[in-house]
Length: 417
Ligand code: GDP
Ligand code: MN
Image 1: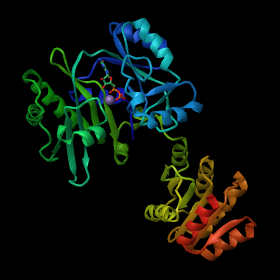
Image 2 (image 1 turned 30 degrees about the horizontal axis):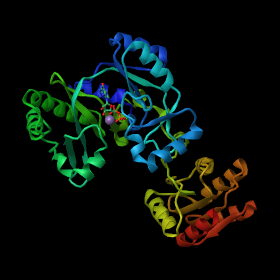
Image 3 (image 1 turned 135 degrees about the vertical axis):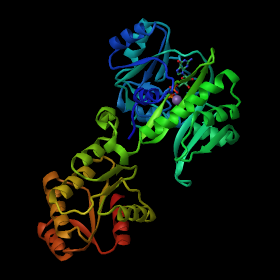
Image 4 (image 1 turned 90 degrees about the vertical axis):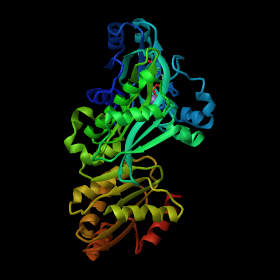
């Protein structure tokens, strides 16, 4: 689960990481008031669940986000001039409270497009108003799970404020990776060693060491899959500060995190939320045009692979699990059909504990109720398959039935055109 920068900073601050003073607001008037309280000279920062905001672009309507995204993709140099302070991106320096209010008015409600938002962009509904930091140097620090090692790893770099993937490609020697033994943790002395290794000036080593240790504590406490500070900065007077922050919470730990106060559903995919509310365990929106409904995560993976092998692209991952509820199947097909990029639908059910007749009833009912016009290819097998096929035949609806997955995938790819 992603959260906003201002929320990530609260978590970091609670674990001893210094962050600039700031206030999250939703209106321009509030932004002006917050800026005045912070002394006038502030940074106005769009709060969206995507990075690259400083080099992003704002557009007035969603109709224009895709064109802007293509422009940014086609010409990375176009974003190079878009530094902070120039009035184009989602991070702006304001010299006074009045200017902060004016900037806020220009940003709120607009769509911010960055290399991380995708073509849809993200509408800005909230801003973080923060005191400005006098930046001398920018660094990078993150903790995440190294799945090969099976432990957390701290990653730091002298090249802060840029996309870490690009740093890794250009200057891999500028990145230091430190595996962390979870039993030993990451105490401040190890942080100080790391700061020395980065060549930080003496007065800073102590503070940076504490920042690294605090980052690790925050990572643990938030059950994070990623806790990233890009950049953390050294100020003119040798203080360290987390100027940006990103924390992603492991969904498997959501039950023990304050999700209700951290989650912002308006940032999430509307269809994924619908699926969740319908009780569908896992629906993930993808980029292709063949909608899929499968029972079982492994079978769903295999189904997506088989679609790709047949030359197509899945529009979603959807595991309906062990279905024995007609309504669930009906809702699942309805949600797949709501996706505007879907051109054909592939149902792949291998009934074990799930019953094919229940699935068939749900499919028929969804088509009748929601007027689903896309070609539907169904490969049905397993428990009660004869009854299931009978239900489909009796419905008089035009399902394309296939006996095996390979055939079904080829039929779906052809039907999607
Ligand atoms: P991102 O573009 O979404 O990663 O947003 P950041 O919060 O990282 O801001 C982008 C860049 O803006 C940072 O790398 C800094 O260089 C700059 N920046 C952010 N806050 C301040 C500030 O208080 N003062 C100055 N001078 N620059 C800032
Ligand atoms: Mn950043």
